[in-house]
Length: 350
Image 1 (cartoon, helix red, strand yellow):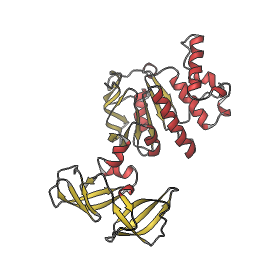
Image 2 (tube, helix red, strand yellow):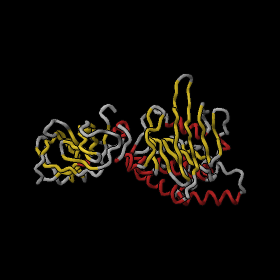
Image 3 (cartoon, one colour):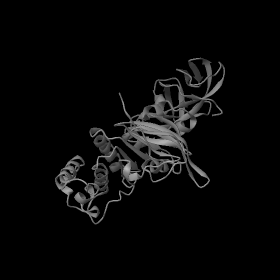
Image 4 (tube, helix red, strand yellow):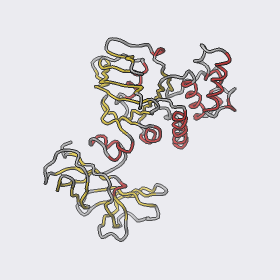
């Protein structure tokens, strides 16, 4: 049975008269990696600071291991929350080498225990050969690993990461996010990060909360956020897609220009009602022999795939991913086939 390690129950936070967090709720089990994902200014970093204890909350409560650490009337100091933190700029001590940085929070241990703990984390983050180097002698990825080891060496209950890959180039960011996920999972560490980059969120997190205006719109897996968004706002933010008009023809079917979609309609809607239907690029397959045609308005080469922007006979636009050997020119008409396995619909006024 899973043990809940972190719980936020309707957390409120204000700066002066401005409400930054509005009834923010989430739950994270021990060993899970969570992520707060959203645009700049949505409140995700403030939420992290509230969890850490750097900011007081004005309503609701934050619980760690079922102990209330923040409420409107009480706040446990950050140093007593057993939380590790990896900052956006790593915040390494420039005058200390790698060993001293990792061991900085271990002053209560005996010399032998401290040495063993440092050696353990040097091995885990693959920095055995850089133990005597200083931060300015390390690459960005190495500095990130030192920051991770320093945060985890005191064995915190929870690890927080604030935009941990924003200072790295794209390739290193992708590789390091997978590496850090593997480390956290192997050590059964509970963690929560904040980012505006959904690729990072998808790569590292088990659960993701999409945030807007201080609220979590949906707390779910990456798969469900992409294929089963709860509203238009989440659908627009996660991945790419197009909205087509549809008509409800039964309790389990919606008809669109491309054909009939089968599945559970996520709200009560009488037969004949108009709805908006989300179509992802992978819902539309390019098939040369298909009698259904669409004109290419734009193409984006992505190596193994090409993302086509297509125009249907009605004038509505859709996106389609095709293997890159299906290389067609803008203006051409190509055959397409509906291959949607998920029915995602919204009321037109949503």
